[in-house]
Each structure stands twice: as C-alpha cells, then as structure tokens.
Length: 424
Image 1 (cartoon, helix red, strand yellow):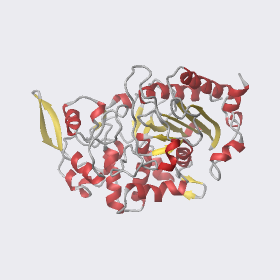
Image 2 (tube, rainbow, N blue to C red):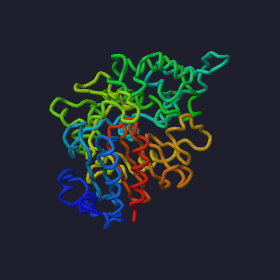
Image 3 (cartoon, one colour):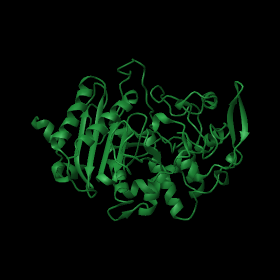
Image 4 (spheres, rainbow, N blue to C red):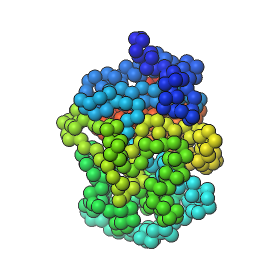
C-alpha cells in the first residue's frame, strides 16, 4: 500500500476540524474498527474509475461511532478543470427528500399536522383523485377507494408517480403533461414549464393516479407535494422553513435551492457527454432562486453539509446541543411503513429485503439484496449519483458525492461493497 493511499484513508484530527469545526470528532480508522488497508482500496478503486474517464470526481466520507475516520476528494471539479475541492457543491436531487421529510415531521411534532390527514385538507385539488386503469387498450378513470394521506406521501404509496420510472399509460400521461424533465441526464432545466410550487401541484393533481392509495410503492412526486403541504401549514416558503428549522441550526451554509454567483465556481460538473454511450449530459443550473422549490429533488449541497445532516440522524435527531427532531420520531421514520401487503411498483429502486419508511428506504433483511448491509439501516440517493446510508447496528455512516447520472448505480454498488469490506 502506498503512503499516499494510506494517508487518504487516514483522516487526521486537524484535517477534520478544518471542515467540521464544532461538529463531530475524528478518529483514525483502526480506532473505530475500520481497516486502513480496506479504505485505501476504496480510494484506489474510485481513482481507477477517474483515471479510466468514467467519473469526473468523487467525494467520500465514512464515519463510525459518530467519528469521521475517512474523507477523500478525488478527481476534478469539472472535466479538464481544477482538483475537486473539499467544499465542492453538488446537485443532490432526491437526497433532498430526507431533509424535507424531517421538516414535515417537525410540524407533526408541533401538533400542526397528522400523518393521517388527507392531503385534500390542505390542497383541495387532491380531494377527489382518480385512478387510471388500463382497459381494452385505453385508460379508464375510476374514483380512488380512499383519500391520499400525508403518510402516503411520505412513504410513496400516494398513487402518484414519475414519468421516467416506467412506460405505463398513466406515466405516458405524465410525460405528455410536460411538467417535469423525465431524464435529468439530458435536461438543463428541472421543470419543462415555468411554474411555482402551488401551480405545479395543481397541475399534478389533474393527472390520474397510477395505483390506488396505499396499495403500491411507486417512486413519485410525493415529496414535491409534501413540500407544498409544508408551505401551506407553515405559511412560509419551503426554502425558508428548511433554512430556519434544519439548515441554519446544523450549520449547512452551502445547502440551498440555488447556487449564487459567488459560489458558482465551486459547482461540480459532469462530463458533457456520457463516457460510455456518448449521450449528452446537462444537469440543472440554478443561479437564482427558483419559482418552484422542489421538495423532491431541488437542493444543492456539499459533502460536509450533508454529513452534518447525516450525523444528526445517526445521533437520534440531535447534533451537539441542537435538537432537530425527537429520537422516537426518527425511530418511527426509519421503520418500515410498507409491510408485506404493499406491492413494490418501482422494483428497480427498492431491492429485495427492503422496505420504505418516511423519507428513507430501510433494510429489513441482511440477505436477499445484491449488495451487503444490515437490518435497520436507512438510506437514499440522488439521480446524479449522490448517495448515503446509516447503519445503526454497525454505528456506520457512509456518504458519497458524484455528478455522473449514467454511472450512479455502478458507483453506488462499488461504494457500498468497498465500505462494508473495510469493516474490521
């Protein structure tokens, strides 16, 4: 093992304090049951992908027992550009969802909303949803058997969907409505129409549901609707609520729905074309506050910022003296809310042995899935490749930031496999 790789695997206390001042302590890997050689292998494998031209750059962090034992920033900020800095900003897309879900549960703790509330109580357009049923080559609309609840939104059993997760008749309706870019790897804008949050949700409510509420786990715009519910209940914009309740208390100063001019130079960029198939890649650019603050995928963040959020989750809802959410609330959120009777309508995103909680996928069994893990862990990722998980039984947090939408599944499998292989 080279000295360079070993040093990248071993994060010193001084290095840690440079970016996690007053946050969480650091430790050498072997002090917390991580193999320095295993972490060096993780560094080497990811560098192999960078050298092969498959990844522009990647930032990674591994923490155990609440102590950061590994941090590595490799590759470049943008193709042909400078080295990836420690404060690089990434489009985190659907890793927005856990943050917004925590904000909703803070309103639940304040007694301002119940998970059992029908969303029509807040958004009248959803008071009488229709379900699209494919029949005789057409699409028949039938009344929903029950109301969509806030809990349905949180666990993706609302009956809403995304246009890009399949090709059913309902999803073709979504695509034809032209509300949302179906392929973030080939879209410069997040929305295809200039709508604010209220307008977006009103247009979404006109579309049929893909399944009856509560019957199926279908990855969807549900968290976008949660964001709108938060705005209605709080009387503030979603961005203002997140800043006040989560981002500012945790010191997440680089996390927002846009990247202002003074920070643009730190924004990580993908390859302009997919290195494997040559398809153009153009991720969202947001230099000004957007009209629509997407609760389902609109945030930008840094590795250090999201690590603060992840450590708060690991520590039972608190960071130092700051309490964000109650321990039992977080325990409730990271429990499986699907059970055996809910079908998995988007199986490509939820491997066997997994369920879904309130804003997170949760692992139910050690086996069955194609990658290692432990029961009780919870996680999610973003479509451009960002990814995190927390495994309470292993006292483990792992976080990866990358902007490579076509390679995201490959990168996640590599990262998860090599991190678990580094447990001593």
